[in-house]
Image (cartoon, rainbow, N blue to C red; front, side, top):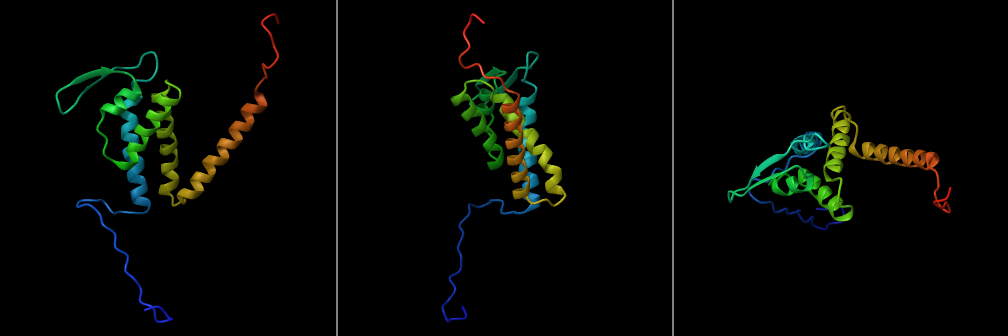
Length: 156
């Protein structure tokens, strides 16, 4: 009962059987590790000397590719945090059409760098704020170093 006499309604949360309900620092580190495993799977496909990956699905269809988006689609990733990397690759492919492996590797590197701070007890929101500040500082520096090409013609 509440102090004013009202009854407290219990919260009911329905989860599928076998659902992991862990929380906190351990879960955050587990999520980072899962993402890093996916990143390591596509890392070797990057660059001019990138290696092809051979992926065979449950139907027996074999695909050979070094395209990050293709590999990410073919991998049957079930971990919720690691699935976000697949979403990043799909978004990059849809918006730009290239750079899917690069964005996945960059995301993985950001997570890898953040992992030590999480292990040291830094709250994830503080890490996110720091990443946003770093983004603002980097954007300001790029704008400072950039040169406008507006109004220039081919004759110059």
